[in-house]
Image (cartoon, rainbow over all chains, first blue to last red):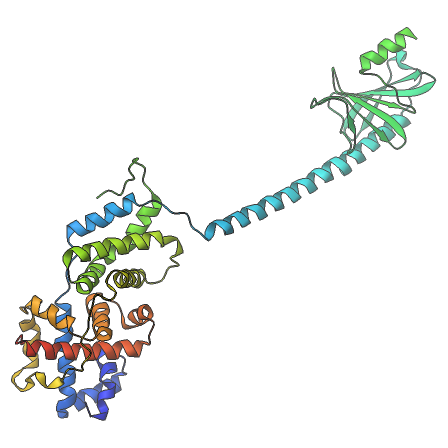
Length: 223
Length: 180
């Protein structure tokens, strides 16, 4: 093809030209045999090629479906590391949040509230010793019954409640039991806690080594 | 046909794949038959294409799924039939067709009765670049841009190859006595 206009024929055939350009090619085709022949051949060749289009036979479709249905499922090679990384990050975040929350709850709020309880118990006017039936004091919405004893020359306060006392961070746990006894120093006082048979807190200016409140009572009865 | 697994459980991945790719099986079949020429090998190529595509399904990032399948089909065809094909490289003359005796208006209807065997033979005689472009665009139904993306060449190159290929095809058909 030697006609200079033929350069725009391909664009004309695929509709890439603007309407104005397309009209110009249309007009040119009426007077240029060479370009007209090129367009005609393109049309013939396209029609011929498209006439070879077939529909895939049913046997081929069935064969493909069957082979795919039997094909093993492969795992995504690159998505799993991303998922694993995301999961690990989530676990780390949760762990940090959980540990932060637990630390906050166990080392700050419980300790603070236990220190408050101990302060209130120490400040309570218990009158005479335990034989009087003790006195009551209200701390942070808890109503405690407090008894005071003289043990081995030292002052021991015993506070009873219906709900467990908060265990401070770093407390020494005597047993593996969930509600087992524990002991901890609080503001220079020796504190022992027993949850069985009922929650009780022993506060002394020296450590009174007893296994239970009943053991303390038994020890006092012998003295 | 059901796509149930042998153990009876349905697999979402298999179903998603088939849902995405089965609408293009006609295009793949046409490309396979024109690429392999032998029906049995064409069936093998279609199956191979789908199995390869399924194996690579996790890496599929969207886009034109037909182009994706066609690319896999061409790669599979190349790996199966590389060096098995010899293409004429001479530039065929455009003077083979007696256009003066041909009326453009009659071409469409007359071509309906073309001898498919002669047509396939003519297609096979096209230079490989033109032939593959015609297969992708006219038989596979890809747009020029998708064909260009598949072949890794500019869209204009595809359009030019298709145009030249169609004209040569018309010339070859006229030479073979298959006239519109």
